[in-house]
Length: 168
Image (cartoon, rainbow, N blue to C red; front, side):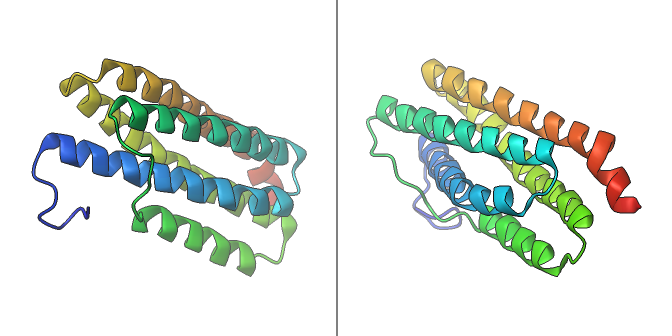
């Protein structure tokens, strides 16, 4: 099912497609986080990435519950947006020679991911409610709150520690 094909005919089709999109995205994030943990030099940032990896695993579990509530098999659909965000993060990280600047770049990359997730979950919650899938909306609201919290934590780490050190 592609976003710009004729396979999406109903709001339910669109809802399922975006659910598959974020499922794919969360799995890609789960794969990318260990590399970010390894590259980060700030202890708070490393701890935040580790915590988010654990959260991501729980979020994937919630998405799998959502699929079951729809009587669908959990599966992802390629998400060019998250692939692009992760690719860009790897490229920028590869170009950073200074470890303090690298930490700032990692925060920026992680926040780009968080912001993408926040938009997807917000939309899915709204659509779930509209389609009468209140249990799914509740599951996704838990995840949305975690994503917002992770974003806020990254902002705090950046503003209180990392950005000042990176700026010299």
